[in-house]
Image 1 (cartoon, rainbow, N blue to C red):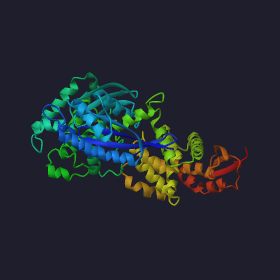
Image 2 (cartoon, helix red, strand yellow):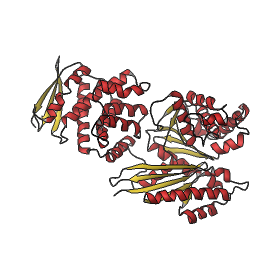
Image 3 (cartoon, rainbow, N blue to C red):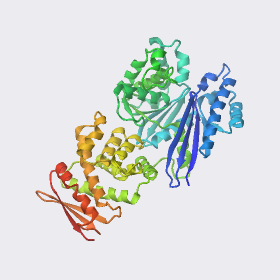
Image 4 (cartoon, helix red, strand yellow):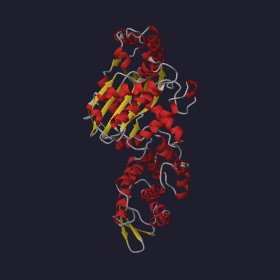
Length: 509
């Protein structure tokens, strides 16, 4: 029997509740996510006390969250509060009143803890081994240096998108002088930390500013892939979005595609933080993480009983979770992957393709997940598989990798692949599409060899003559079996892609 657990992140700009489901098999995934923008930092008075109106707003929102948690039968709720509560002189009274009124208890995180949880979310959802992370909040920004997947340096800076906007911008549209003063202030803060001088490493960004920056850029580019996690921007693209937004009036900001109306008045200051960091470090790569502090808090609580809070293999864990969620026949999927590996390696040995580890990774993922569309509908299940692999997050993969793996997993034939790939033609080359088609044929063959999902074919061997490829299939089946019939259907596709006819021979164990 599975259970629901929740995390509430009380930030300086918004209060967010995320509910996770943990299956009996050990998989976990997000099932609900709700946010209220209350600008808690704006409710600090001159004595750094949260005023009554601010307390009332928090109680109102948390009362609604309590109703949702009860309806979802959430078994445990972890509440964390960040910079504004950390700064508030009356934080103890504030948290006591929340606990008595709503039943939720909150732990006030230090800046170092904020940085750690953001780091944990990134390394457990992306294949990042070297680089920096930045989590831009409303009143603080946390930076981390990652080396070999480990946190080696971190610092919490006492500024965020809300506080910098209030501190530096006087009017509705920031002046050139205000923007220059803001960037200088931020850069001066970075300069006092020598570990921020390492050059050319990627920066992974978290937080609402980062998500809105990416959404605006995706709309500007008419980007076809509906995902933020692992979206990558170059430095000049960050600059382009900044220059597009910086002179817009509040009314014009409200009409910008991809920009949240609740964040329109503070996003410029947040982007200046990103610009200043890219310039200071000398990095050209900015990568978006849709996972952040609250996910890190949850990951720690879920993984703390294990030997490490770091997921050993991010991609493998993501595949395992999807296979459980979509009720994939694990024995069949693993056997298909094993057959794919043999076909892949032996065709390479015979000189019929020059693909390596990166392409094998795509085929392996496709082999494990090719059946997930069957849980939607058996009719056109390949199309459902494609849709799910494109739209459901698979941690550790870039958008291009997800797209190519989806094309391989859903492959039926060249015409259908072209139809599926057409909306994404700006993301992949013709050579990459041909690669997906060739690997898709290998997956078709491997699936055919286990058509009854009973692992009757135990071994396959390839041999090449001058004018033919001979596929020897060993197992408890013969040429009259369903496996043999299904495999015969793919011989023409094989010849078209690899240039040689395929001859099949069946052998007993």
